[in-house]
Image (cartoon, rainbow, N blue to C red; front, side, top):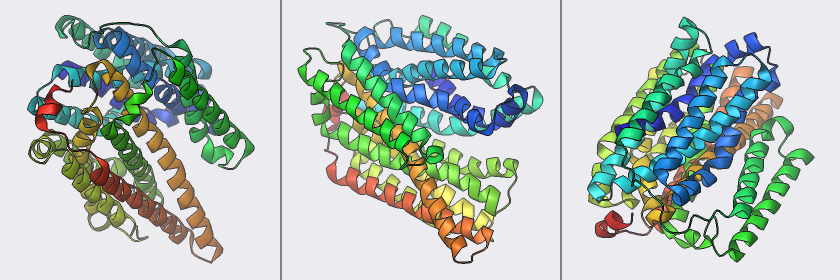
Amino acid sequence: MGILCLGALMIVLDITIVNVALPSIRTELHFSEASLAWVVNAYMLTFGGFLLLGGRLGDLYGHRRVFLIGLAVFTFASLSCGLANSRVFLVVARGVQGLGGAVVDSVSLSLIMNLFTDLADRAKAMGVYGFVCSGGGCIGAVLGGVLTGSFNWHWIFLVNVPLGTTVFALCWRVLPTHAGEATGSRHLDIGGAVTVTLALLLAVYATINGNSEGWTSARTLGVFGIAAAIFALFLRIEARSRQPLVPLSLFRLRNLSVASVSAMLWSAAMFAWFFLSALYMQRVLGFTPMQIGIAFVPANLVMAAFSLSLSAKLVMRFGVRRPLAVGLVLAAIGLALFARAPVSGTLIRDVLPGMLLLGVGGGIAFNPMLMAAMSEVAHTESGLASGIVNTAFLLGGALGLAVLASVAAARSGGLLATGATHLQALAGGYQAAFATGAAFALVAAVFGSVWLRRVAPAAASVSA
């Protein structure tokens, strides 16, 4: 469990650690403002595009084997990123890094679910997994600042090399060879794999560029249209295939479908809150980058602590529905507090209360959401189910950030047109975005509490 969490921690760290070093990367490699975004986007594009395929490959060829391959790819790509001396080389290496990260992320959750079949043990294991994911973001921001400031930006990637090598060696030695071992046919549906991966890549690409290109531009709408057409072709292939990549019957599992929709709505609110709250503290309240980083620490610590201790106990006592609903409602209240976003706000009075509620709500909801998604899935399809729910998280976050950023911009523009000051317009835009995010979280809470099916502890414990 500890080794698998180290592998997951590498992926979480890499998502946040890079942001701190972007100014240094831009200066040394002479990126333009537009091209610099692809240091992040190249990773997110392949990460989102290959989550589903990575999870399915684990089901077909063994989770342990595929996990080790993904870890090796991620570590080698990290070394390449650290040694990069040109813009193109760094962006390509980041794309390969995202591919390895997608495999590790989707398969690690499947391995945990398959190694811990008892409900109590599984709830605790998922709590630890949630703790690592919650705390990793905070560690990444701090570690990125330390490495970039003390050495240079290359070390934010090179630090993954000894860590990845160690995790690989320990997994090879300690992880049971039978863990997630595939049985039966290993036929890979090539048509399904190509079409679903291409559709996801195009959907993530259109989402990433939506704000810069314009959501109603011909290019954005055209890419979304092509993605939808390819996805329709994928559904047709799967319906006719004898051994489909994604059995469509999987979507008849109510808990997987409901948990994925709830995950998409919740991540839409949380991703946007993380990004926009940083902008609010910087542009409206005048916080320094160090102050912003410190402001996020309490929420991350609270989320990590609740994921590790309370969440598993609540799942064991009340099942997955009530803890999920309570956690998402608390997160919605936290976002609603942020919707005040005054121009003359302070950390203690206007930022910390909402952050603490978001930390508590996120810490409670994360564990039951993942357990609900995996509760009715056979072990032969656990990697695929993990890929589905992780893809829902990623696409929901990307779409949510795009939508809420657009809401903030539109509201700010409207206030400026009516004579508001620049700071008042900015604060008003963030208020509208946070209120919309609160609505997303509340809808996720209602949807999950109404539609999730109750799963008896005995049934849940043997589902894998």
